[in-house]
Length: 177
Image 1 (spheres, rainbow, N blue to C red):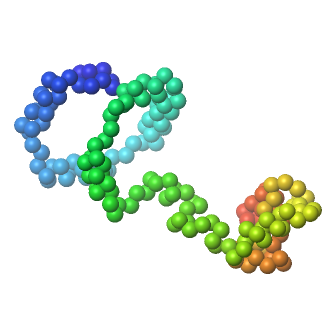
Image 2 (cartoon, rainbow, N blue to C red):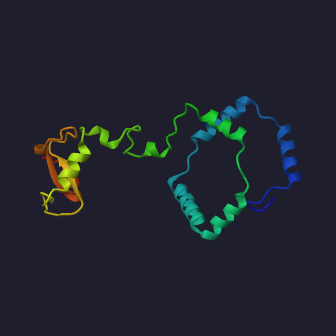
Image 3 (cartoon, rainbow, N blue to C red):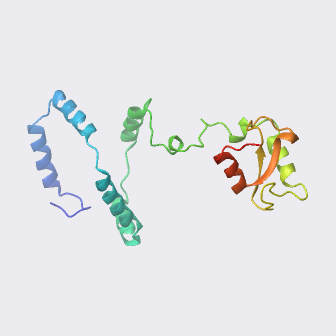
């Protein structure tokens, strides 16, 4: 057997290939294997060990260079990429970053949920002279808070200037106003 990361000799590859061709696996058996493998999940302890090993492996510059050199020149053919793309069409991909992010709104701008002219109103309030947090008096890291919790209600009476800390406290403890 070749060392880890080294290419297998052609003779060994041919021997393995002919052995596998001599023992074909039926579609029913393939289906059973597939179902059995879906049930397998690593225990949390095993996952932690794997994660620690990967962190160690990819944080070491020498190891990163070695892996880079190992895969230099390897690329996926256009046919293989087309097959992968076709297989993925219509499938839900829950591991995409946008699906894990609670800020993803389906490609709609974050500010679209506010009323028209929101950015202009917000900037005008924050740049007004003497703008400071109404709760603690801080003059930095300020945000505009909607008293009634309705983002579309952007009238002056509904808006208050708060620092980020006081703003998060208002929302966390449910005290609007």
